[in-house]
Amino acid sequence: MKFDPSTKEMYDVYTTLNPLDFGNYHIPYSTKLDIEAYYYHRIDPDPFLGYILCKNYIDSYREASLINEILFDEIVKWFENNMPKMAWGSEEVVNSWINGTAFG
Image (tube, rainbow, N blue to C red; front, side):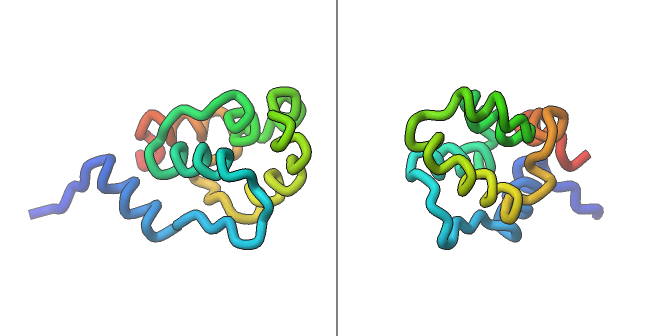
């Protein structure tokens, strides 16, 4: 019998094997929670995070709260160095992650 995992199982396996690590980056707690909600639960992000996920940094900066504006470079650096490419980089990638079609 061929194993055919559900979409949820595929995401669970992928995110377990590729956990988020905020390490020594200075990212606001509320922003970390929003990133985790998007990554682990495929929750549609707020405009600030949505623009970052699509690498639209100009619009993201415009949507930033004061604390995210102050730490903007640090947040972007974290994404560039840590967010798995399968979950960010363009509007199409973000939409497929949220809609559950990133795995085919």
